[in-house]
Length: 171
Image (cartoon, rainbow, N blue to C red; front, top):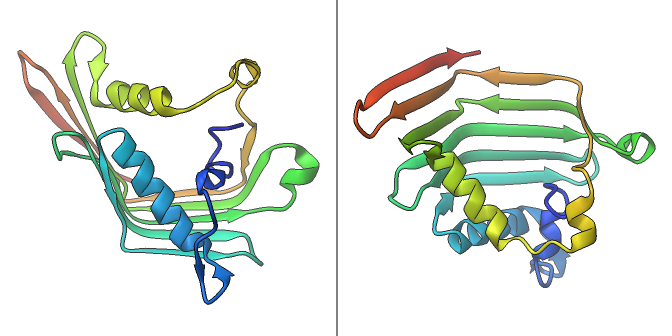
């Protein structure tokens, strides 16, 4: 559970506030940028909005760059509509997830060594997990509606052949 997206906000040492009011939007940006810096990557986004009454989160203009400044993941807009039903279902329950203009970049270096494998290994190396948490399965997730618009995946298979392929648009 420590790696779930809802628990990640718990890593902020003290709430970020403006005029005494906590702002989850600022915390999301700060935590994401901090986590990427911890693993030698960079993250930027243009806007983050959260409605605590409707339990919605909207992020715009996210880009995560790898250690060599190549883009790993980018999207124009992510909208997540979380449901309180999660308390009843004992699962992360999403009414709707929308992802617009998703761009993924994957490159194979040698054997099974890829950008994504390196990124995930670096992320898991920085995560502090107790032995009890390590044995727990990840939380269940229920997504009622998933909308992906104009996504693309660019793949480079190397190093010898340098085969490049872009798959998209995916809708």
